[in-house]
Image (cartoon, rainbow, N blue to C red):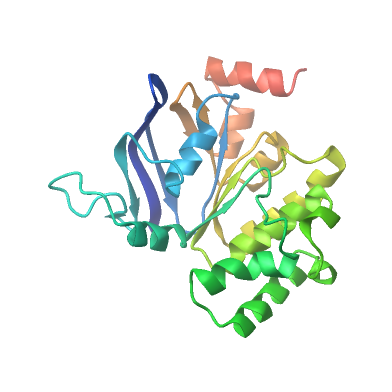
Length: 255
């Protein structure tokens, strides 16, 4: 039985008078790969950041295993404590478009930082698992180098290993290839593809349409702070009768 892992309920987010999210609801099932696409400025990245509480919501709720992570009960708007939020965030991995690695730490030190400091895992155990992950992403030989010595694609693969080191239940990818030179995109997409094939639950914001079609169990199209459509990749890309989405796809893949 496929169960709901994470759910957003009517999420709204404003920055001052600018309402970026206007009521976004989305359900993510265990083992599902959800790909979010849409034009720039549609709220995709902001929505992703609300899912792991890097951005606070103006209203709405987020549920993990059908339990609110924002409020203690249904009677009021009592916020969770910082410790509770940190515990939740440790379950939700995040990979950013600009890598966000610590420049003064080696590859290995970047990867073990979270497990040791947040999950309180013994350093030797954290190192052993980090080395296993570096083998998985093809960068074991780079473990003692600093990020500045790596290509953008290598840095992003380290960032993915760092997220995996926390053993999260779900990983969010915020345009993981947008900061990369075109020839480096493939190596990062290969790692993400392998994770999908291994059954990891993922939400991916991307502009890589062919990759979205290949990897997604569900395609979510956002525009102007709202979800316009959720659909199977075949329906979304090959049989879509929504005029707004047809215009978007035409601009991405002009005939």
